[in-house]
Length: 301
Image (tube, rainbow, N blue to C red; front, top):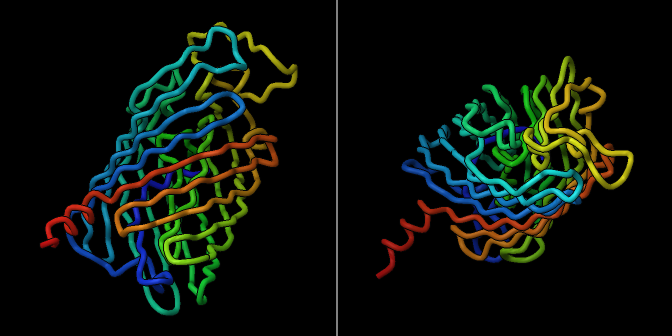
């Protein structure tokens, strides 16, 4: 899932069917938390991502410092479970919402606060710039995301972008790549009924220049002797692997079922398939918009 896009968009549910855009622009403090459990063939890992920021109508600034828990890998000897903070990020977003089109552009800079020797960070300052376009046609919202950066992140900045009616897409990775990369994905959100929606998208990443693959499951302190199949992917065989652009290129698809029973709570179950790496990832995500929850609580009699 892709580039580090540290944007948090408000999830909305308006009446029986979705609104024509991702909610009305608001001004004020923004705060949210996301709890995601992902499972890969190498093992499960958990991300707890608190975010705080401020909305200036069309502009939004966010700060995020994730906390991550990684189980012991079953594909490398000497690997143990580990936990810690990931790479903290600062993002600035600009949003346009209209009857014709919804547009979101986000620039992000991530600091090396995560320990790269155990896969929790990139080991250097990284950046990403991603733009999103969608339009709602009744129950159907096609979308396109495109961006460029110098890292694909393993959990500390899992891509999360809201569609026209508020559904989210997230693709967790069991590794981090460091190196210049362009990424694009496109697909459709289908708003089935009320708070229930379904998403399907395809993605492609196109890196260039020198690359580094940092494993989330194989720590640098492990002896580096993998077990299991003879043909191992780089993130299963070593903690850090210098690689070429062709070795970090990826393409595949993601799908998810999303439910937003209130304006401040969301639940998503997703599946991601990397065709290039023959890798499947299943994730369950719970999100709470704390700022909206606080405002709605205060308005109750």
